[in-house]
Length: 194
Image (cartoon, rainbow, N blue to C red; front, side, top):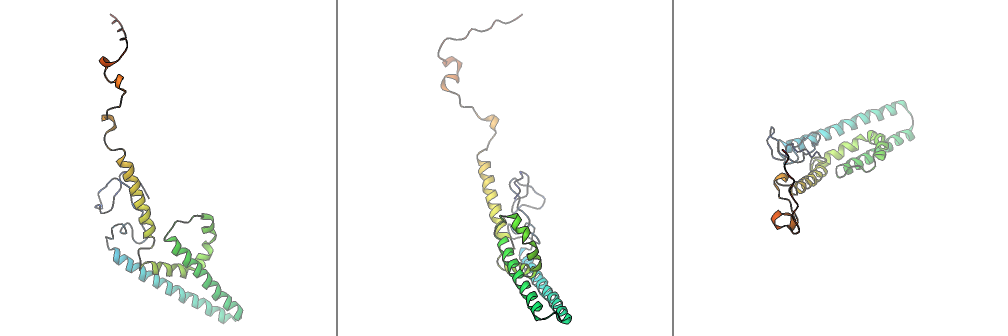
């Protein structure tokens, strides 16, 4: 979340700038998720269709790979092992992708170590993306939560510093506010130099 003082806010015209935090764009959705404008519904439908089509195409590619193993006659054990490997990796990729829509990763090293498994199980990641589009734009809930928290922080920070600080009167103790009201002897004035 960017908290620039000159950034477009929700509902602002494309060329205008309003003070406050700037929403983080989502892949395929930009910042249309903020107020569901700019073809947001069509983008969600397109993301659903596109991710499902990519998942189906990936399954055909995996089927051709499995047929290659059958042609090579590597045996039943290797075939079962490949199917189980892709199923487990797809399940892990689905779960990690789904969790990634709701929260930021806490351990980047662990995410890096799972990158290979998620790559092998790419079908699961595509299916997670497909199913999430029925609820919201994938990642919208997390981004909306962060954006609203940034707006709250910005408004709180802004409300505590309203007005021109130079124009404020300083609070002085009662005996220093007016030299005539000061108690004690008056200090002698310095003579002027000629």
